[in-house]
Image (cartoon, rainbow, N blue to C red; front, side):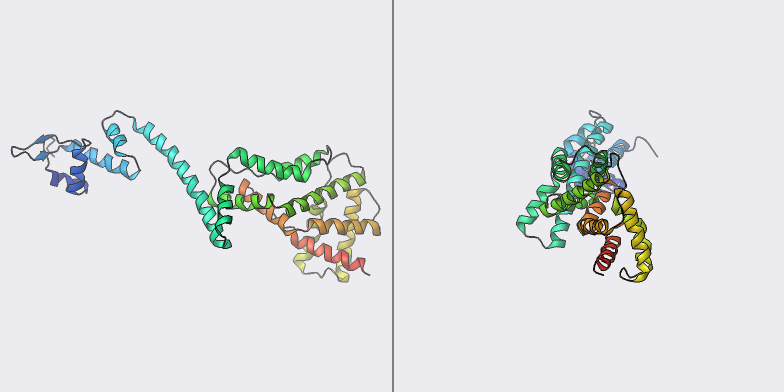
Length: 312
């Protein structure tokens, strides 16, 4: 191709796939100035104008404004620097859109009114420091004043959500629901009772080091019975209940008697709150952890089994 060839504005438009009106618009603003003019005064453009228009079109599609594009094509600004700045701005916009999507989805799914929608919106727009304060107040309400047992420090850490700087929609929606649970006085009170029971178990046993939580022991012992469909009130359940109470007696360092079985029943009734399972499930989503195993089926079975034997 002849490198000295010049194109009319119509030819330039056809080569770039733009309209004549668009080419004239960029030309009038000096972004793609004509190389020359014909004797009749018509604009003429060289191959450099084709390359500039291709770059302009790309930058416009990426959302850059015309003054910035002008400086980039004239090499007054580095494209790399401009791209970095706009990438940061777009990241903020993406995060805002994710937050809005989470709020609107929650409003639609729950059929919420304006006041509740505003409350949700405020919740997802909390700063990182405000989120830490919310979580800290929740965990303080659950664990404060229970002594210096090192086991509680680990439990507290395991219950702490950390929303990443660039969360996906699922993490944002999980955070909204988790924060609502953390602000629920009834849920806080229930977890506080669980923590107090755990502290009492350790004090009962004279434990000075972390011991395995009874809920984990219940899951390991009872999940196979639940999967097998064993009736918790039947004779087939007797060996499983015996193993369960023996395990609890070992954890507490006390005899496996009626008093201990009654204590275990009360403990499991307190732990058996479906909101606890939901909190742990949401926590895993927010923190990017593997999905946890639900405790509720094993707890339901154990409570039914212990109640049936207490009534005999």
